[in-house]
Image (cartoon, rainbow, N blue to C red; front, top):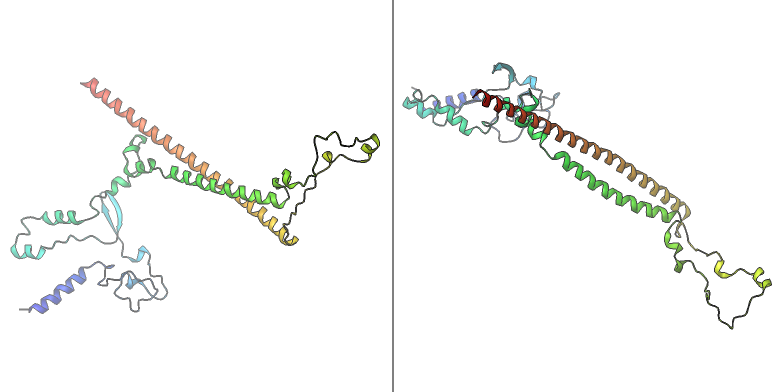
Length: 294
């Protein structure tokens, strides 16, 4: 007769042998180093050594090929069905009376019980089935492309503002600033448009020798270098020109990307509408056939 301490040791040994290979007693995360020194209780530590990365390929995880629903699939490990009342049921002898209790409890505690891989990964057999396909219908009704195109438009508008600022700066450094040709900055001489009667009359000889100040060329004082070194000003012009060209090239590229997004979104909507119309026509034909048979 074994004592209680020996029974506890046997139970712990049985649990350790039944545990999946990748599960450990350590509460820490997976090992992220290339050696198992000090990490022997972490997950996947048995597959790690000094010449190997800590994430081993799937081929070393003891893959098994099983046949499920007529399809051969690789399986890492089988999910065990656990019940907290297994020991009590075995002692009372009631486990054989309700064999489905474990399945029900396991289904209630399984967070993945609502996932149907057959429906999610099933191929599309007919275009009319697209609106009812879970994964494909979600993709075709998504507004991600429209959102991306809107964000691209915001980026284009922001970069266009930068282009306008660079163009203004470039025009100033080239001497094309329109503020220089304002009347207040041209230093025009004072001219009396309405000469008084007391003003001396000009003879033909004086008129040929002098130019009327009204028709004289204005003197526009401006400095293209703004008082800085000539080499530094020239370098600033070159850098401004390069920045302007890069902004314009970026706008052209992002505009091309946005047009592609709009085109893809338009095609997505057209394909979804066509598939939906095909499904509606099929339903109408089936209803007409049923009504004719009746």
